Image (tube, rainbow, N blue to C red; front, side, top):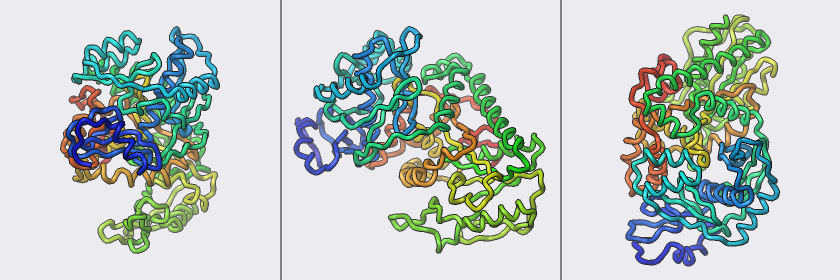
Length: 538
């Protein structure tokens, strides 16, 4: 749209809104994501962001969470909410009493109050304060984690949003008026509520139950409690006081204990149970997990053999294509399911097999020189993204299969009102790994990320509740280590290109973490080593 002077974005919206069939929620000014309250200056480019944009749903969700906090403050000033994590197609917000008693609230009354705020068309006003002023405001409001975080920040100015006597900062742009926030649903859940907001295109997702995933989050919260490290300011205190080595050792011990428990569960059900499928999204640490599980099975007297579904790709000429005409290696049809399940069944029947090796350069299958066979004490570990999909395992006896879902569900929050999205943490892992071991730039990784995410939404997340066990590969300290690797790579991305939007958000997010420079406390079998290097498994 070129350079614009003096005219507000709000005025511009009136001219442009007719060209958008879904709500406009923000603007990209020189590819930096901003709210609709920015004052215009001279920009190389201005682009309106609507709910069809990949950034749109997150902005809308953030705004509705603010609306929820405002309603809670108005109805129940002695209660407080903690935005915990994404769950059941929404955001789980735990409601607590400020004096430690059990929180008593009426979900229907809360939702009614939110609707009333929407109908009142109240402004959500952004005001900019100096860092010192913002710290004092947060301190007066009892937002200790937030005031502590900005105490160690190098930011000069902080934006705080105000509405109906409530003020907060949710680390990103929000919509400017409550009238725009009428599409949401509230479900009572556990100690609080699930706040559901629209996905792309303003489609409100249905309520679902993810009990196994919820249990994994509960475990993550318990681990954070064990470590006394719930929020980023707690982690920064560990670093500042030179106690992070102990934090690392406890985090790694918790991982080892959980892997050992899963191995014990598998061995307890042998010899009936013989095939272990491991699946999870990109950069969840599946490969290191599989290796560490193998070690724990060996400790139990089992001698597993490992199979990767990557070696069962069909020949390149039969690989399905995506909508852009590119090879889709994450599609289920890219795997030769029949060969994989036949070889597993042959091994279970005591027959020798020669395993395939997929040549990624030629796009053709090759074969191991020696045949392998399976003894009664040996389970099979199968790693691959489709391991939880019933279409892959339907030909095998159900009683012989054990399925494990691995994902990085960050137990650390920025502060009580701002959670760390697992997708963002995994993207940072992938940026570091791609540069360290594959020679890819951060730009290349960010460009590929939407395709990766689309594959996960289609091929992994719908099946996660099929797992017999779940493992959380996130480490509470990891982002303070990854920052020094990722930040310089992200900084190379020019503001002239669209990927700068994502890069800038990640840099803003990482800026709240102090650095962990000394890495000797991170063991060589840590899942983090899969991304930063010096792993004993690679």
